[in-house]
Length: 150
Image 1 (cartoon, helix red, strand yellow):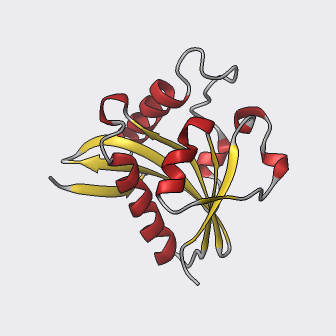
Image 2: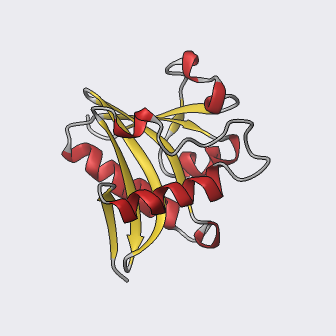
């Protein structure tokens, strides 16, 4: 198997990213917020959306928002048929490596309550880092943090 984390830059990758987000993160009944394919945060300076590929098949998404030595991991999702098979950890490891390469020392995430166990197993810890983020899409999320570079 060949795995790759790739920044979303070409139209096919944007389409794949939006499809995964809509099917997993914005599935009917999951949120009262509608998904916006043109949300400016995806193209804001310092924010990079990524796709995880297995043999050129897009399997997962995440966005890394760089804030100096801190990175915020957002909109993390693995396609439904690959969940609970280790792909989330693979995506996590790729994002950590990319963040380190970019000089990020601390990663933060607003984790869905049903994902907290995954993040704890991956070495993250619960830490309130910005309560103003816990509105809208972040409502009900658990804030977590991981030091990736001392």
